[in-house]
Length: 72
Image (tube, rainbow, N blue to C red):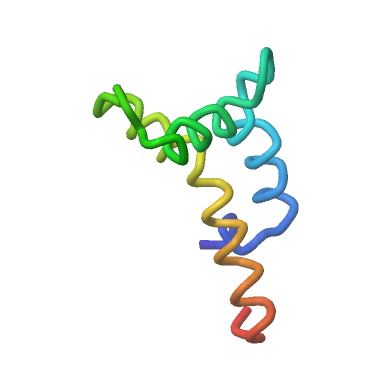
């Protein structure tokens, strides 16, 4: 529980797992563009991949919301 409330850990997770691989563009960015473009041709593995690369960002957003509400 301590790790998901540590902003340094969450930021590092976003910068490493969330954005990897970095070339030619961050992976999560490419998946989000695919979804916003209608998700045509996305397979279950692509959705799972989006979830795994996007999870650190979801945890960081959760942390920021809780911090603003002074719950942490």
